[in-house]
Structures are given as structure tokens and as C-alpha cells.
Image (cartoon, rainbow, N blue to C red; front, side, top):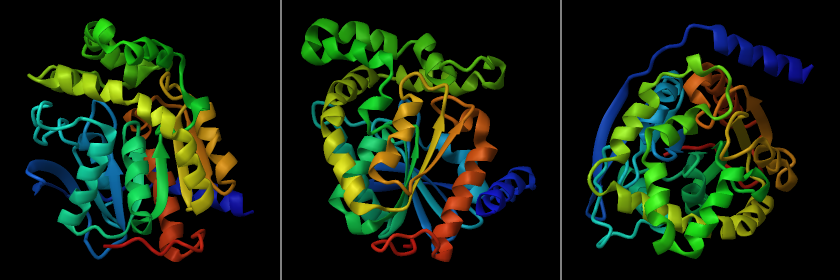
Length: 319
């Protein structure tokens, strides 16, 4: 009966006309770097920190902010080197996931976000897990959207990264040429989805333009090279998830070639209470399933706000 009621609530949320909350486009200086961010909702509402993937930015969350901003306070920053944030010279700024996490930690200080639900997609997962480990008291719950922390979730493409990690100088030119191409940027969105007509080409053409700005080749190469340290950290993050047992939502596009469905299902191994939804979408599942993602995420956040489903160590999210 509970499952039927929950399904009905999600279905109603999908078809019901949604109030489009206004989104503010702001910036704040963090450690000398101008960090752009999107913000929706009143600061008195439960807070959600949204961390984006590659090669996107907070723009990927714009629709979700509009759909949930009437009920929650959503804050979505652009990492250094991404979107509308500054892109410091790699000779002076370390483009590693550890450093991005430090900047995001200081960003939360700058905007006054003390407690929040952490929502992570793609690169957001390794940034967010480092942030969660650094400040576990700040994180009230976790949402993963094709944000992988399990080896089972690594698609076949990751085998192509290993030669680059073993010998950067020999393989960097080819790796970056592919990464910055229209074809690879398009494929990242569509994956194995047969319904290619459902995807707006502007999704990848805008990202392609960002990827090919001056200085991006070195920035992207540094992060791709550093990604090997994320894989090495998987056991540590899994142990953290198992120990903390925070309320966890996993929303996954099944057509993702980078992070496959077994990576979504693996969360239940360390947290049996994790809520897992596999949708008929791609790596950026909100490309085609925004309404469903908003409904599922809204229902999950609603349970947290009402106190249902919260773990012993979690308090309602807030600022």
C-alpha cells in the first residue's frame, strides 16, 4: 500500500502543472576565484547543494531549480574552470578533485550554507564525497544522479583512460582531442538511448563551445588525469556511506555508457535503505526526464522535511 501511494504521489507530481520558481544568477569571490552560481528558493527553506558534472555547469540544474524552488532553497555553483566561474591558469591553480572540493567547501561558507542535502551528478560525486568527508555534520542526505562511486558502475570507456593515467605525455593529445570533439560531447548525452530525437542538440553544442575556450585543454586534461584518484578512493567512500547510513536517493539514466546501471544498484550494498530509481534516460537524465527526476527528488526531499526516513544522525536540512 505504501509503495502504491508513493507511486501515485510521484505520478501526480509529474502531471500536475508546476510553479516555475525564479532563478537568480549570482557570483561570489572564493579564495580569489569568482564562483558563479544559480540560486532558487527562500533561504529559510531546507537547503540543497547541487554539484554538476563534466563538461556542464550549474546550467544543467536550471530546470530542476525552477521546479523545486518553491519548496526548497537550492544552490548550484560552477566549479573553477567551468560555466561562468573564473578559470585560473593551471600553472597557478591545481585542477584536482581535491582542490575543487576545497573551493566548494569555502563556497558554502561564503554563501552561508551550513547544512544541506548534497545532490551530485558525474564529477559532482567525487567532489561531493570529499566535501562530505571533510564536513560530515553539514550533509543531511545524499542524492546521486549518475554520480558513480562503485567499480561496478564503470563503463567500457574507462579502459581507454588507463594508458593515459600510466603515461600522460604519450596519450594526452589524443585524449583531449576526443574529449573536446562534438562527437564525444554529443555521445555523452545520448549514450545508448535509441530515442535520439528527444535530445536538444543545444545541450552538447553549448558544452562544446565551453570546452573549446582558451585554456580549457589543459584544465580538462588535468582533471581527466586526476580522475584515477577517484577510483582509488571508492573503497574509502563506500565505507563512509556504510558507516553514516544517511538517507540516500539514487536516480540513474540507464542509457549512460560511462556509468552503468550496476553502479546505481551497488549503493544498496552499503546502504540497504537507499532509494534507487533507474529511468529511461541518459547520463544527464534530466535531458529527457526532468519531470520524473523533479517528482522523485521532490518526494524524497519532502520525506526529509517531514522527518520521515531520516537517519539518527541527520537533522532537517537548512541554512
